Length: 439
Image 1: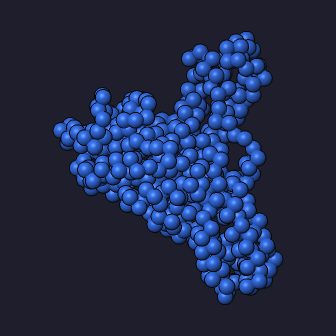
Image 2 (image 1 turned 90 degrees about the vertical axis):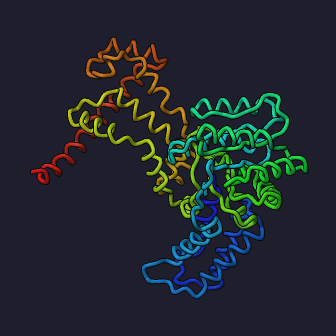
Image 3 (image 1 turned 135 degrees about the vertical axis):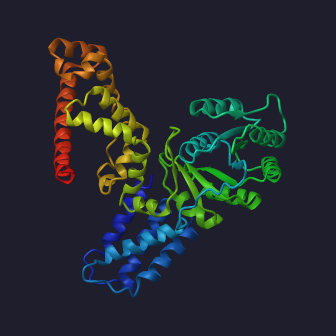
């Protein structure tokens, strides 16, 4: 996402390159290009115009320090305004009820059901909540079954009523169930339509009035661009929802919805879906998103994702094995699994400052680890633990069993050996520095 916008903004800032100071003429030329870039990214016209007018007002008359170039100063101003445009501060969920209730709203196909599962898993794992999912979409074929499948995957129960025709009663009965079984969080998945219609709006309005949710979230497919913003406005006029969830931000979206929706409905974006996996859900941080739009990466989010997969006891065990040069292919598989849980590989790489531009035309397949895993799984348990016993005949058998060739097996073994040596050196140098302190 935002790749084209990032590239256009970078070109716009180059207009000021070499200029000694910011003037009305050169800043107007730059911001004209910025406005075009925003419009091409499907940002609402009024939002784009107000944005560039504000940036121009703040940029003119600024004293440019000798150590700061005019283009750098403008990037700083644009970054601050982008952050403000998307809400400024991170908006948290406010879950105070017992049980706390979250109501989903949105059109059919926006990703409400999948998001309900993702949110249940996130709050269960990070906030130690005990969630109950509620199936109130009684119209879409297999909607209830889809929620049940998601519930099984994350080990969260799903409340549903066979042959029930009244979603308001289903929701109220689910809350009674939650109270009786001590669930402290109820997430209600509702029906959507292909377009906004009176029957759907009346129904979800009736559900909201009956259950009094702590949070009503509007889930929208970010790939629908300005239609997403218009739909959000219609839903907000009827529901007065608390926040927005943007799904499919990993797709081929120009990002205009993320930049426009906050201004048009005056409600914060609370979450973004970044993939199909149940772990692919992020809290929305306006400042970090501004960093990514301007090609600065998002190292904080990358570290947070890594920490979510980090197990302190496992890390200590691994450090001891590395120090003794006992790091084996079983440990290697564990590390690959942790990386895969962090999300889409190209998205992860784009969070590193400067890498996003370098990867623009490079396709990083999420199945990049597939052949490596196939080779390792073709080894016997003894071979995984003792890679040094892998002679020519064993390598040939592994290549045949994994559907690869002997060259790929040899390459992996060579890379693994180099990695093991490097890890031992790094661990050894750290231990050496710690030893004087321990004496």
